[in-house]
Image (cartoon, rainbow, N blue to C red; front, top):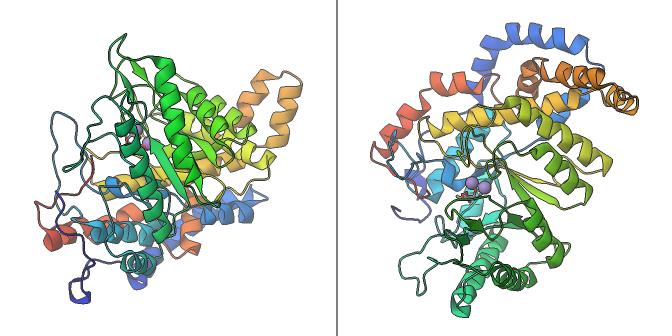
Length: 439
Ligand code: RM4
Ligand code: MN
Ligand code: MN
């Protein structure tokens, strides 16, 4: 339920905010023990300054639909104090960014968060040091007042009029993004079929390609289009952009502004995601990344909560692949968290996800590349494993904390979030019944 969308007048701007003074006080309390742990680690790392700088620069976008309680089709258990509109979502990400200085952008889902006053929204975001990351279109739900239904798909649909509606929506999302300073569009299609025979696969593909082409044509020159794939759900027999091969096929046919987007939860069990990432990077076709973790499918759990080693292995390929192409780690790929917070406080969950991402990134930066190349060249399987696991088993948390400290963020964001009783204050401000738009 959306409760108004206008920019808050100054008098009713959020009272909950974290100031520099509170962060400095918190850091002072932890400084002695942090300093010891960091110094000890730094002693063994000749390139520690570079790594801390890289961690400092790394930013992960937060989706506007991740600030409220997530639900399943069986229920939703809100913890209260959820952001009631786009302004409050921006304020929440502002809190997160103040705590960690690594969440400096927001990714909008249209029509869950339609900005009414672009200039005011941009100003508000800038006030928190935030910019607008990828725009996300939504043709997987019917909206009230929408003339045609997406029940049987959007871009794949047998009816040209439905396809046109999906094209128009995506072009509208691009226009909104241009107003906000975004530079990319993520298209995730729920299109597919749930029963054999329901769909002509070839026609579904061709219809989808034709629609994506029209959207692609509307893309400004300095924009990217991310084609996100997903193995199943909501359709259970076939998905029209079902895996990285299909996504790559669309992206290749569309042109150089189109890329594949990898969402960690969108693979069949045991898929070797690190290999997928390596090959997409090799082809210059990896564009964006959605972080989450899972045990079974698109579980959307906290990043790094189930398979931290896999996350490290993926980052290992990302770093290796980006470096081999001379890519900028912070700018050349779109990084975003795409999780759902069913049990945890969404902000605490996001703090944990960002931390897990930075830890895996730091571990990947520690990998002794020369030793690994040498082990590979001599088929020394044992040594290759040693090299990787040495990095993985290094406790890099002091590096991540040091990067945060230098950026003016909290040494321990979660502890500070709790010490300041951020959620309690948000509940006081917004009430226990506040509901955020999203899934
Ligand atoms: C999908 C996919 C998309 C996200 C939606 C909400 O499973 O991950 O990226 O926009 O969920
Ligand atoms: Mn996703
Ligand atoms: Mn997903």
